[in-house]
Amino acid sequence: MIKTFNNSERIFTQQKKLDEFSYTIDDIITKYQIKFENKMEDITSNFLTYFQHSLEKELILLIKKIHSHNFQELNKYLIEQLLNSSSLESLNKHEKDTVAKIFNKISLSILENLVF
Image (cartoon, rainbow, N blue to C red; front, side, top):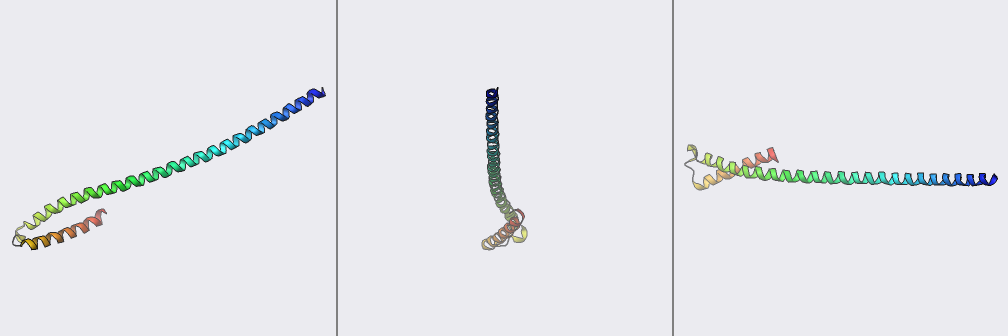
């Protein structure tokens, strides 16, 4: 009977140690799993933030190019209309170029303040 009791106690002690080991392993796995998940979230978040900023920069550059092109076409048209008006027909080529340069500088300044 004592032998059976000692054997049962030994088995119980071994099972207890195995259970403690299992809990310890589970705790370690959970701890590192949480660390891994947090790290992956950080990496994903950083990537998405960088990607978003890159897209924003590209979009801004594209908008600037479109505005610049449209702005140049609009300026050409407006300068033609301005210089072909009856009040400016008497200007010589140099004077018309000067008026065009002034008009371009003024309109570029206005555009930069509005868009950029």
